[in-house]
Amino acid sequence: MTPNSKAKARRALAAWLAGKRKAAGLSLAQVAERIGHPEAFVARYEANGRLDIEKFVRITEVLDADPHEAITLMLECSGETPGGQDGNRD
Image (tube, rainbow, N blue to C red; front, side, top):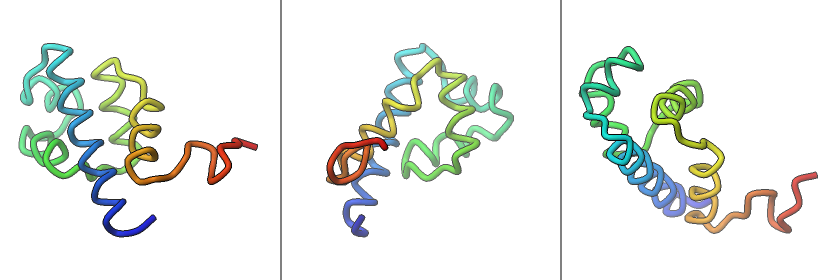
């Protein structure tokens, strides 16, 4: 993955997370409270898409969102395929 494709994937993740939060009818403050972080943390990851995996999974739980959907989106945006270059998951 190139630096440009990484940035593109992070932007896609940020937009996906913000969209899921809004679709769930939750404010930044509500998500922040549920994940135990400041509101600024939520605003920051919605702006830049940078999260560690544990926080990402917790946030998708709070949003009742499928983390696989986000990962697939990021891979597609970066030019990768979900199972590797040939699409196989083996």
